[in-house]
Amino acid sequence: MKHTLRIAAASMAVVGLASLSACGTRASDSDSGSASGSGADSVKTDFGVTKDTITLGVLSDFSVVYGPLAKTVYAGNQIWADQVNKSGGICGRQIKLVAQDQKMDTQLANTEYASMKSNVLGIVQLLGSPVISSLLPQIEADHMPVMANGWSRGYLGTPEVAVAGTPYDLDEINGLQYLVGQGKLTSGDTIGQIYMAGDFGENAAAGAEYAASQLGLKYVGKKVASTATDISAEMAALKAAHVKAILVSTGPKQTAMVATQAPSLGLGELPVLVNAPSYDPSLLSSPAADEVMKNLLVVTSLRPFVGDTDVQKTVDSAFAGVAEGSSPTQHALIGYANGQVLGEAIKAACADGDLTRQSVTEHLRKLSGVDTEVTPTLDLTDPSKPASTQSLILKPSKEDGGLEQVKDFFASDLQQGYKP
Image (tube, rainbow, N blue to C red):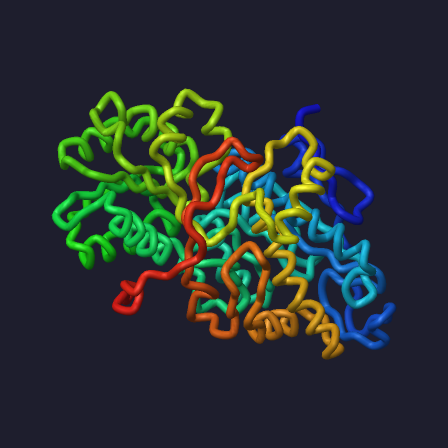
């Protein structure tokens, strides 16, 4: 058995990838009206809440584009839930997680959401830009509070969907500013970008193209499918354009292709700047490892797995216990941070005596100055604005999680003129 994920405070375990699509316990006995519980004598509820349990959903891609990444996000969700439950839960109730594998298939995701929605108070992990976008109308109609694992600007304006970090376009602006500041790019240079079709890649491309125009750089972008297995034509086009840096906004498999093909095209010495979802530590044990270690940088609003904050230490120490056989990644931290944010909204809703979805969503949008320790300080009060605008720069490392910090949180002044 190479992979076991334990559902916190639940009676069954999720064992192996194949079983994820059918796993999870359901809170079919969810209370409606008022419920009683320790610390909450008369709390209004609707979905996913019983007298002793708050059930939260996880709808993720455990097996296709983001398998290893999603598993570590889920581990972070579980570590957060375990910590909460050990301290007495929220509103006198234990947190329970139920998980489904949507395989980055929007039709499957819609089916699984429909089967899950009556049994959960909210969703603590919803991963994948195409999936999130396809579910937005239902999420709004159901007043379902959701923590999105995708930093797309496309979710802004939806009160129910919160993103604990900085959108991809602002990451790209910050990242390109960093490359210019480090002397890796100068005015007149050409940059190339391999980006995924859909919200993630196209959002990142918009930010990169804007930053290039402001920094005196020429921009060449090449769009690929999320499942692309051959990007040789796109790489050849970047070579023909004489690019001086390559940006990657896809999945880790395409990042590996960029790294392995670059040397044979005479592009092996160029900086490669990628978004967080484009990197996985498994790249360091792949044929692309040497190139990745030498040239790759990650621009993101999430700290690396190993570090000095209490959250990093907590997740590090507990990771092996909830993700047996899996290698840690920084994405375990966003799983934990998502739990922190949604948990704060649930606590506030409980204090108001109303644990309905709409109440939790309203309290989610009252949160400001949220210090997760692993993201920039978050302000979620305006659904139309990003919760943060800062990014940091990481590089590959042999440390657990495969990354180490190069530059702490910062925001480029170029953002002030950006109009997405």
